[in-house]
Image (cartoon, rainbow, N blue to C red):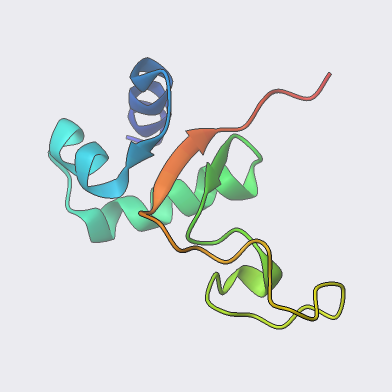
Amino acid sequence: MLYQVLEAIEQANGPVSLDELSQRLQVEPGALEGMIAFWVRKGRLKDTAIAGCGGSGRGCTCSAYPNGCVFSVTGPRVITLEPPDP
């Protein structure tokens, strides 16, 4: 099933929401969370919900960005492919 998640995102040819992926694969969103996290740890996917400072994605306070974290998530959560390392 892990590879089916990766293949579905590759076939989407762009960002895909968790809900869309859940419907496409007929898997509960909660079950997809762990599979997506696996591919994020492996460097194959990027998940906007865990991008940014400490993975919180919500109004974090980075010392490098005193006016607020530039990586905070304000739009819908999307999962995308990470470009391969050269």
